[in-house]
Image (cartoon, rainbow, N blue to C red; front, side, top):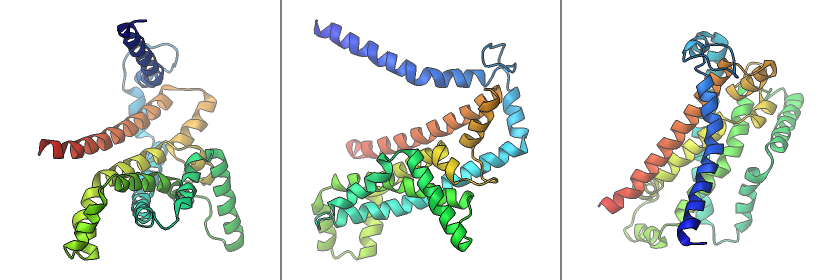
Length: 270
């Protein structure tokens, strides 16, 4: 097989993969603009379902819950994950390699196992103390717990890629702790911090399993609502909600990617 034929085969395989990845999302978006209540026949373009969506107070409350959960948990997880990642880097030579494996556990653990364990934990505390009733508060805590490892490992990988002499240079220039943090560490880690925030936001906004097990009656999020709604059949309104989620996740990913690209291209431009 010639080299040209091999590359053409790889290109065709790549297009097939992209098709199966994004064609279902495109179909969902298309039928969210359907003028009739059907997910099988497309009768024309209409914004009817989006108009009904934004006039429904229940759905607006659910959107508020989703955004509150995603933004709050992402901000807190970014702060904790940044500190944890820096701590992992600072003490990496003190036989704390096991700590990295501990951080990995929530990432590789099945969501349903993690969600059930979180629900059992909060229910046990609630029955014993009356605190941590299932609701938006417990969902925020649960989301932070599985977002932190992603942010920490992202920050840690960024620090590992730096020249260790840069930290020594800060000491040689008699920079105080807050000066090192403000003028060197934070600017250097800014792309990783921003990427970590948007990664945490993306993980939170589309999470269903952990949210389902830690939610209360008044803390329904969009993925939970969609799961409940499809029991009655997939409607254009459900497609509209799914399209908004796809758009939010896509926008967050594009912003994070653009920020990282601009930051990495700046030294080359200089």
